[in-house]
Amino acid sequence: MAGTTIWVAPAIQSIGVRRAWAVSPPPGCFAVKIEQDKTCDDIDGKSFCGIPPAEQTGGCSHLASVTIDDDWTVTLTAGCTFVSGFSKCDGPDVSCNPADLSGSSATFHPCPNPKPPPEEFAIGHIEFSFCCT
Image (cartoon, rainbow, N blue to C red; front, side, top):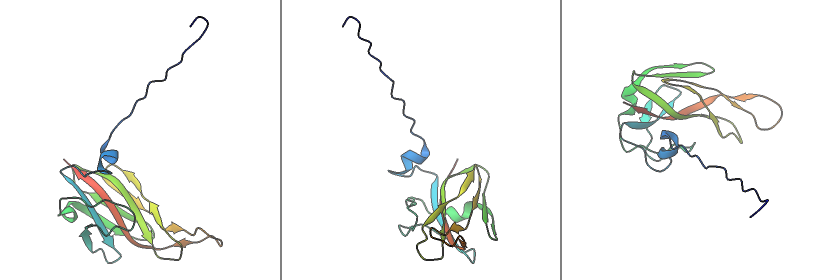
C-alpha cells in the first residue's frame, strides 16, 4: 500500500436517557399530559406527539407548578429533569410544537400555522416526559 493513505474516523455514539427511552423508559421516569383546565393525567398510550408511555404512574405528583398563558410553563419538583415535551395545538394541519426544556423547567409555545397567513394556534394540551432521581 505504498503511497496510499487510509483515513478512518472513529464512530462515537452517546446513549443518553432520550435515546434509551425511545425503546423503554427507565425506572423513575414518567410521561404526562396536561389539559387547558390544568387536569393532569399519565400518558397511557394516547400520545398525540409521540411521547412513549412510562411504565410508572403518578407523574402528576412531581409537578411543582403549571402556569397557563399564551405560553405554558411547567416546573418539576427537585430532582426531576425533563426528557422531552410538546405543545399540541388547536387548528387545522397543526402538529406538535417542541417545548424549550431547561432542566426542571419547560416552556411550551403556541404552534405556528404551517400555511399562510402567518398566525399561531393556541395550545390545546401539552405532553412531556421526565425522570426523577
